[in-house]
Amino acid sequence: MNLAAAGTGTARRDAWLDGVNPAVRILLAFVLAIPMLTTIDAVSAGVAVVLMVLCIPLTGIGFGATLRRMAPVLVLMPVAGLSMLLYAEPGGRVYASFWYATISDASIGFAVAVGVRVIALALPTVLLFSRVDPIELAAALAQIVRLPARLVLGVLAGTRTLGLFVDDWRAMRLARRARGVGDRNAVRRFFSMAFVLLVFAVRRGTRLATAMEARGFGAPVERTWARTSRLSRRDAVAVVGALAIVAVAISVAVAVGSFRVVWM
Image 1: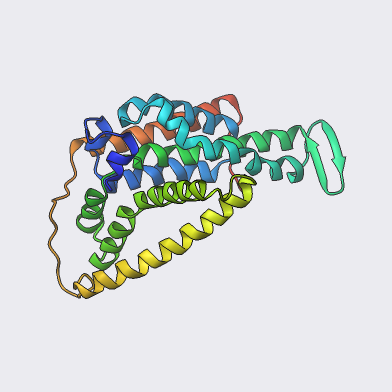
Image 2: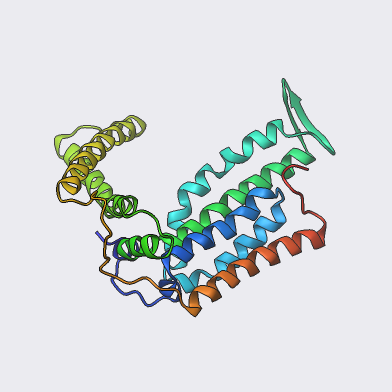
């Protein structure tokens, strides 16, 4: 299954980001993530999120699809900030204190910053890789990044099977419903189906690895690739855009006086 077609429901690839090399997309993800991992303030992350949201029309995904794919992150975001809320170094006004936990102005600020940074780290992944073509990704990893062919082919095979997980999950759900099993206790049903899906994945991966090895995919020879991966001006524009997002986000945080490095 082509992830580009699966993620958008269409085979058309006419968005601006579709013309950016997959290897450059990996670089963009690192560029957008590294500053977020080295600073801890809500302003820089918030500005970065706003700027990335403005770039959604360039990705061809759409705001609704982006929100749906970010839903698990939005649900789990409060969990990430909870530890900071309770156990961060207190400062300012103290609102509550129990055992080793203290809720203060400083801990609330840290909790908000961590929560926003979770979104700022997850959003680029959704925007950059939702429509990536696995074959183009493999070609870029082999020809641009110069990774070993054995590793690239393994990544390609694994990526092409991701769409099967959705089909397996749907088939299991329909089968259980037809048998009248698991209509109650949604939590237990979820973990039971997740375990079965894990077993399916291990078995499919074993068969796939054996088949690929039998066909000589692991042979130590120089390989050719069906598609040629090249860099273009659009790739340079994308890198400059990512650097601009990071620069604007940090500049705004410094201007308002909220910028703070993680180790300070």
